[in-house]
Each structure stands twice: as structure tokens, then as C-alpha cells.
Length: 105
Image (cartoon, rainbow, N blue to C red; front, side, top):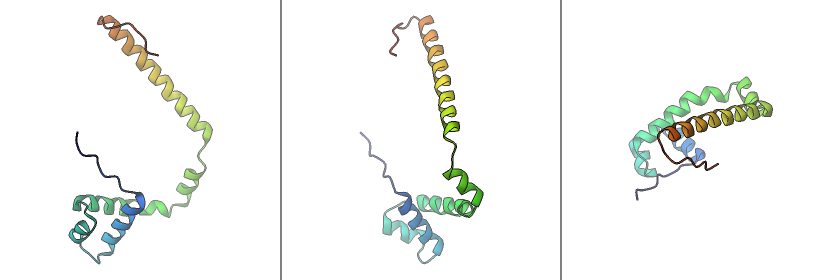
């Protein structure tokens, strides 16, 4: 079985990206210090610079905090309906191919 990928916390990613942006150490130095590939550090740095403007967008923060629960419920029901249609379609196609006709649901 292969290696499991290392998961990094958002706080750790931000810390490393900020250090990379500050320029006190090079990306290669940070890479060897934290034992992370330089490409990953550059990716986190790019994500930080591109997403920094969202931190100061007042309207964006309000929408994230006050999401409409009814809209989320409606979206979930829509997804359930789509999955049911796909399931029925695949069951019908598998029956035409002569596969088992048992319904696991």
C-alpha cells in the first residue's frame, strides 16, 4: 500500500506562506527547515497573495457568516434528486445489459 499524503493545517500553511512572503529566508531554506517541497510553499504563497483581497472585502464576509439555511437545504434536495435520476438510469442500463437486477437500496 502506498504512502498516505501528509495533511497540513491552514494555520501551518499560512505561517509558512507568510515567512516566504517576508523574504527573510529563501524558499529553499524554508523547504529544508519544514521538510516541505518548494513547489508546495510557492503554491501556498500564491494562494495567500491571491486570496488576501478577500480578507478585506466587507460584503464577502457577511455573506459567508449569514448563509441562508433554506438555500442550502434546497441545494441538497436538488442534489438528491439528481442522484436518484442517475441511479435509476444506471439501474435501467445495467438491466438491459443483463446484469443483476437486485436493487441495493
